[in-house]
Length: 241
Ligand code: F6R
Image (cartoon, rainbow, N blue to C red; front, side, top):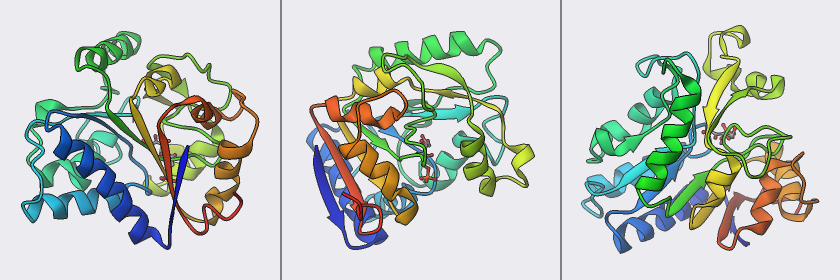
């Protein structure tokens, strides 16, 4: 596990951007896994800038997002599809049909999950997966207790996770109770994983991820077993390791 210390959030985003550009410039038809939430917003801004400066084209890239809320349409401002369009996809030359997210509004969610795993497999698996980190150690929406060998599946969201994500909704009551998420097994099949963590409130989760016991109670602890993980954190997030 490599740990990169950034002095601040801007530097964290720049370092993450470097790794993604390295991947895409080495193999234009790369498959990159993406996350939503606050942490990767700076990375997406920097990828847009790199595209606008003519440094990179995403025409041959394929992306798979980690997760999506159940029951929200893609044009709902709280859906992750909307977030990705708004924060990244609408501003780069990535063809929309190469940008995958689970469809939270599918009639048969279990089938949608199986199909998503197949789409990832058919694309040749993920070359580089970006992850954020939940306060309870979740990755994607894999909450504590999720089996390490899980595939893409439907989850009941933890109360703490709904609380943490309520800031994006009018109120906590509006946060969906279910989501679709890549499984931990699916995530672990990525060739490279880059986890981003920013701020003091993530320090405990980062410390458990790096030094804690390998346990399904801390989903991110499985990353100790992956052969190519980079954690990029700012001073505050890395203050306890
Ligand atoms: C989002 C996701 C989540 C977040 C995590 C951290 O696609 O998979 O696991 O990465 O909840 O969220 P932020 O970055 O908002 O602290």
